[in-house]
Each structure stands twice: as C-alpha cells, then as structure tokens.
Length: 253
Image 1: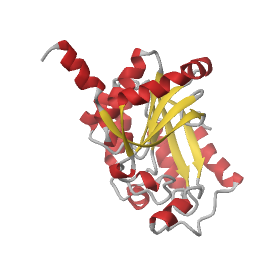
Image 2 (image 1 turned 120 degrees about the vertical axis):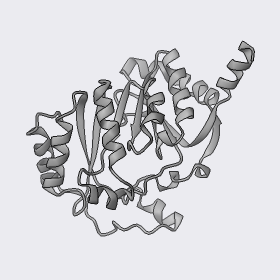
Image 3 (image 1 turned 180 degrees about the vertical axis):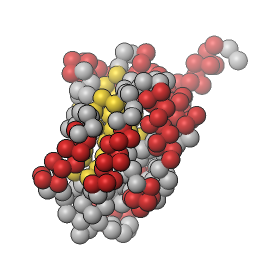
Image 4 (image 1 turned 90 degrees about the vertical axis):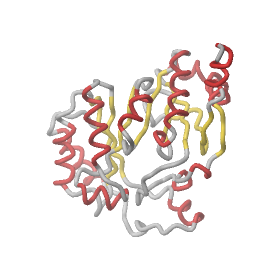
C-alpha cells in the first residue's frame, strides 16, 4: 500500500453523530465544539439524550467533514482556553471514529476532552485516551446496586477506567448526577468520595443536579420515563452532597 493510499484510508474514517454544539461552555474548559455521537450501551433512567441510544439515530459523517467545521471556531476555542469535546451517547462506542477526530485536533493544536461513562473495554479506550487531553468521567453511583438500577449495566468497567486514568495521570473531572431518592443516599456519596480521593489525577468533581429537560424526548420516542415524579434537588440537598466531597479534600463545583 502506498503513502497516498494510507492517507486516504485515514481521512475517510466516518462515524455517526446526532448533532454538534459550536459554542458549548459546560463540557470542559473554555468555549468548546461539542460533538454528540450516537450509540450507547447504558440505559440511564435520567438520560437527556435518549435519541442517541442507537447508531442509526444519527447521521453518518466523515472526520474530514467535522474537522472542516471545527476549524471555523478555532480562534474562539483558543482564545478562551477551550477545544473539542466528544460526548453522546457514549463516544467510546465508536472508538476509531473518536480517536481520529482527536488525533486530527491534536495536529491542529486543539484541546480535546472525552465525556464518557467509562463503560467500555479498557484496551479499546486506551487508543482514544492517547489523544485526549481531558476526561470527563461520569460516575453515576458508587453503590453497585444503585449503579445498575440507574444504568442497567455493571459499575466495574467504569471503576477500572478511573483507576487507569489515575495510573497514567490523565487530567480528569468526575461528574456525578444528584437524583433525589435514587443517587442521593449520603452513604453512596461518601463511598464515591472515598474512592475518588484515592485517585491522583482528579482536577475537580462536578455535582450535577437532576433535571427533566430531556423528558419530552422520551415521550416522543415512546419510552417510559420512570422519573416523572422525581423532584429536582433543593439547594440544601446539593450543598450536603458538595460538603461530603469537600470533606475528602476534593475540589467541587
């Protein structure tokens, strides 16, 4: 195979995305170009993007097409300390696609962030992490039974990824969604805080209050939304959770 053929095979890599957000400000530092991939092995009860469950929910695009679009916003990203974030869905559901997006971004000097549940084959994840500057790791619960109730999958892959990220000292933000009556048990939060405090690469912990902004999507798709009666957490409940993390010496937001 000649050099030109190798180049063509790389630049023709494609994958499925739901949409992009060109000026995101909540999925990593600075102003970010956020790519919402499709395909996810989890079935989180509070998912805001149930329309990203399956690959076929998305549109097929090439990495070249995405990079062309990303380059239009480079000045905004670099001026704000931002970059590109891959989320979903679960971006590690399409590892080759996301790895190539990140590799191309690194060639352009663009910061990359991976927003993941961590539910994946660790060896598969390693190839993507090579080109990720930051990982936003969503740990839905620490109690295994609660985790399975929330997600329908096992917690171990996520914890294994968290430990690996610490081992390679990859900058990581932990995200935890506070859901009244589901994930808000103080013991559950304390166990998660204990675990996170053993890791040496955690820059911050984000406590995200449960909301129902994606409920209408569940209705449109004909899915049963089990958390209809679940309230958003009060400011007092949020502060209690933040305090548990702070008491373990963690930086929280």
